[in-house]
Length: 137
Ligand code: 5GP
Ligand code: ZN
Image 1 (cartoon, rainbow, N blue to C red):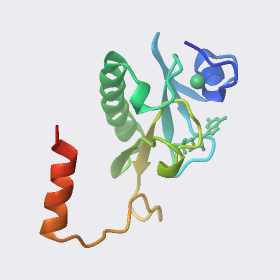
Image 2: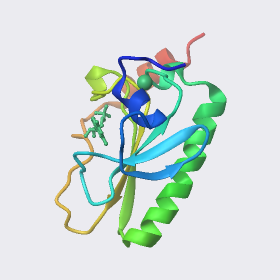
Image 3: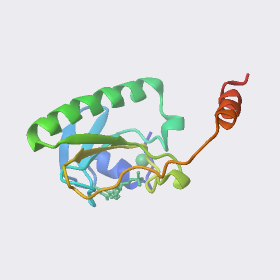
């Protein structure tokens, strides 16, 4: 369950040192090398899964519980004003390291970061068509 060419496998296993803020049998949580804001961290499963699509259900559930716990702890200790969870899948969506991870991003008033998207207009007809496409058998 480890990919020898994967940097996050090596960090998660401890083979490459990292600024670790939490560790258990299943996960390591590290500070991001190029943070969006003070305390920006990454939840890494120790096992290699490329993205959300490959993630087993139990790992997905545990990862979200850990995200909640870390968000509370980091907000308490860093006194941030808000918190983003970001999780990218695939190059098109901004994933640069192909080992599943969740970004934990503390946010501060006036931190100058933009984490979001440009809203587009869409008609009710188009929304209905997309709705049908997604739920079609
Ligand atoms: P992605 O773009 O795949 O969602 O996020 C990858 C993140 O990993 C980026 O925020 C990047 O700064 C971080 N990163 C890449 N390589 C390393 C590394 O070797 N160590 C740490 N701590 N973070 C890394
Ligand atoms: Zn990996």
